[in-house]
Amino acid sequence: MRHVGGARRGLDMWLLQRASAIYMAVFLLVFLICFLAAGPIDFVTWHGLFAPLAMKVGALLFVAALLVHAWIGLREIFIDYVHFLVPRLALYLAFGALYLGCLVWTVDILWSVK
Image 1 (cartoon, rainbow, N blue to C red):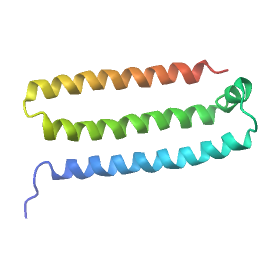
Image 2: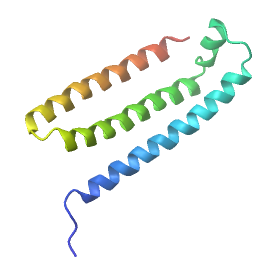
Image 3: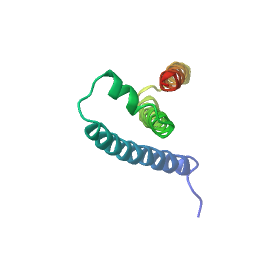
């Protein structure tokens, strides 16, 4: 029995999107618990939430999961609705650059918290 060429890739993308959704849900639950346990939120408290390395790494992984989740969704939209290759590749490049910029910006923000 022969498999369809892109079927495996589609399943991989589907699983990756579901895994990223699960990570985001778990992180948001943990973050909400930490946020509520911190008491009244002011700048110092908010700053203190992101000072530990574990929170920085968790937040960075959250943003990476969010970007992967969004990329897979946009990829499917582009495949379904942008039928010509050149505009589709231009959109991939534009959103890839945007998402990479967001990830670099996130690293800069999180690691500026001392």
